[in-house]
Image (cartoon, rainbow, N blue to C red; front, side, top):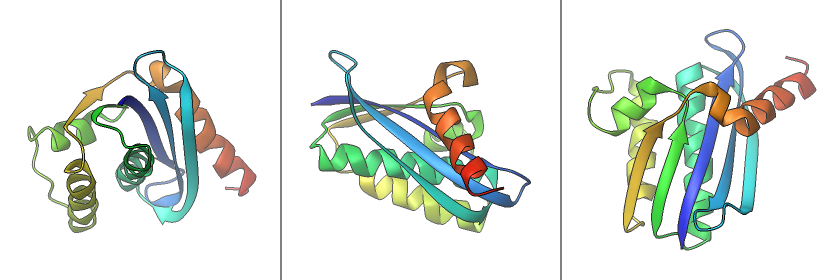
Amino acid sequence: MDLKIYSDGGARGNPGPASAAAFVFNAENNDLLKFDADYLGNSTNNQAEYEALILGLKIAERLAGENIECFLDSELIVKQLNGEYRVKDDKMKILKKKVDAVSGSFKSIRFIHIPREKNKFADSLVNLILDSAGK
């Protein structure tokens, strides 16, 4: 099955209280198949972006996804995942290794940068979680 993942992570403060959210859609008909979100505690924005993508990839793996397109509004993370930028931060290296490990279970995977306006569902859920946590 071909899937689209829209993920977002955010922190209030950098680092600060953070959350992550991911939505997984059937690429053929754009039906929402599943979504997940998590309160991360204290984290940076970039770490939260990676955590959000990992949430989405784990869903895609459970759904037996084959060809995956990942849409993120973090240009830095997309460029790191596409090999354009090196990952220097030790915590982010660990998170990137997790992404790489899960990515190996798919036939193909693409990481695509999109503007924040095209990622409203994930962004809204991130903020809802932070608001609910009183952060």
